[in-house]
Length: 261
Image 1 (cartoon, helix red, strand yellow):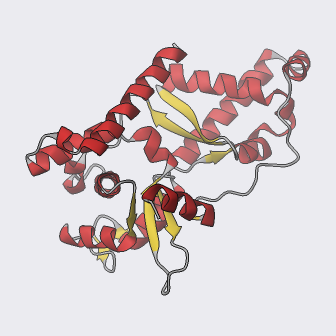
Image 2 (tube, rainbow, N blue to C red):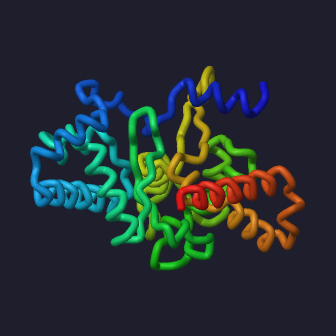
């Protein structure tokens, strides 16, 4: 079986920690005319207040890098203002962009799941693994690098062995990371940086890692390749497959940004 087919099959089997319940079945996206009628019944101050509440909700959730579902936004914050939900989200998006320098991204269009990303930054390079500022992001960068260089999917044993070489034992409590295995298979997965997928028909049960939806948005594959070139004293273009993928991703991202302007 080819790697692409295997990856597709594994995802169909289900992804641990990233599957969400279906979006709120009682909520139907209002039409433009419904939104307009709803706005006519509210004062500008009421709409501004509700927009501010949604912004605050996102900021609180983002402290733990947790993705936010539309169903939760409607249930916990928007509530009786659901008939103007599209207008509220338009204003929320504009507020994050113009005031906070953040970009609101819908990473799962089926279940309407959102994340916030900093428009000016990407995940730090591997040097941060020994930095007191954000060692977790350094560890994550290493894991994502391994997955990318191995074609997008790796068995968990390879990740654990790689971390052991860096003196980060998944079976032991770490000074910076705490429970390493929980950090990697639970926290990074819930944050959508990684997918931890059960491999079908394995006994004992085995899992493999893929890049998560947040990583696809936040992390530069070109930077990973640049780092690997420096590490191995090798021209990044010598990894032809990865080089093409990294730069096609960069080009498409830049094209998307240009089209939005």
